[in-house]
Amino acid sequence: MVFPICHISNTGFMRIFLILYVFLLFISSYAFGQHLPPDYIYNPHIRFVEIYQEGSNQTFPIWELNSNQTLKISFDDLNQETNRYAYEVIHCTYDWKPSDLVFMQYMQGFESYEIFDFKLSTNTTQSYTHYWFHFPNEYMRPTISGNYIIRVFDANDKENVIFTRRFWVVENRVSIDAKVRYASQVQLRNTHQELYFTIRSAGVTVQDAYNDLKVVVMQNNRWDNVKYDIPPQFVSPGQFSYQYTTGETAFPAGNQYRFLDLKTLMLIVEPVSKVMLDNGKYHILLRPEIIRTYTNFQMRPDINGRFAIYNQDNYGTSIDPDYAYVYFSVPAYEPFEEGDVYLTGGFTFGEMLPTYKMQYNANYQMYELVTQLKQGYYNYQYLIKPKGKKEGLTFPIEGDFAETENDYTIFVYIRQPGDITHKLLGISFINSMKDR
Image (cartoon, rainbow, N blue to C red):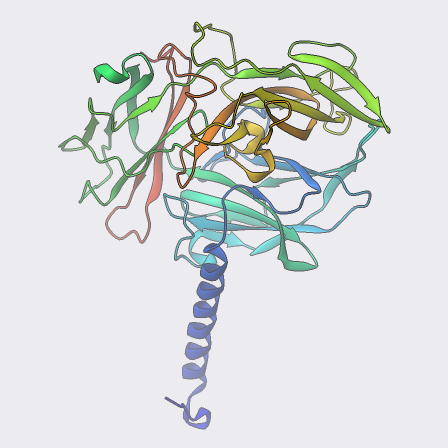
């Protein structure tokens, strides 16, 4: 249909203009969102993207709606020059798909803003520029709870995406009573852990418990084995119970995480076998790993996959930890039939990323990986990704032991009458040792 502009009033013209503007915003965000991994680094020069609550880098990136809390986002650029970067924030559904909301429906302030804070590294063999910014701030602030992605891009070219990282905005309007136990099924008793919990939603209306209530459960901040859309087993007014004994809330328990201490490059500490300085760069050789599947379980303290950047040989700031090439190896007489081997941990965003996929060396009968890590303390493990599947397997290399100490996180999303999206109304953190 063709509209003769000469017959449209000013009010009508503005209405059509606004409709077209909103439509174009939606289409552009939707088209981009179809190819938007929530945690990913697109530029190989960008390393160690961190997002956490201001004051502690071991915290979950969660901001309580309308609070005075802030999140800190930081990253390193290994290029030898400073660059102009900017960021924007994208709202997602409970399962991390870009939502249908336009910017003005979930955020107040600017649609994007430039990053101005940075420092150059000092006394390091690998030069880098350390950037950081805080969110929310006076320029951008979420107005509804839920899942969000921060997208950092080249300030001179918005299509040149640098990285994406996810975070949460919560309202804390429901309570969650949760515990962890050995799996109920006999065949899983020694290898799996099972969650059972009750959600209490006093004052929050849930009309359809199977569509308006969405529960997501995560183990050790891993994204490959997250459980979505767990339906309540029992429903009563203001209360939803999840007491499954048939595996719906059971996870392979895995093993205690392996650790790597790089806080100092002056000492050799297990599992390091050699530290070398070659062509002005540090190279760290680790001892070949032990396959732990059929070994006796050992309760070694860990931090459940997290990591902490720190240089104990210097001032311990964000700009004096150095980088080193670290050599990982896993012995295998032949390639694992189950699938590909990945090095994973908090520094891989809890994902099996292509950057950390290990290659099999038939001459040495080893899986090998060389990657550049920043000084600090790391937890890590080896997962096998079966072909065509998303969930990684701990059993072939790490083993699965029900005694393992693990962290679990429960997210509760609810869509109340009048809401156009599910909102995050509760989060619970539980531990397999403390919450039994």
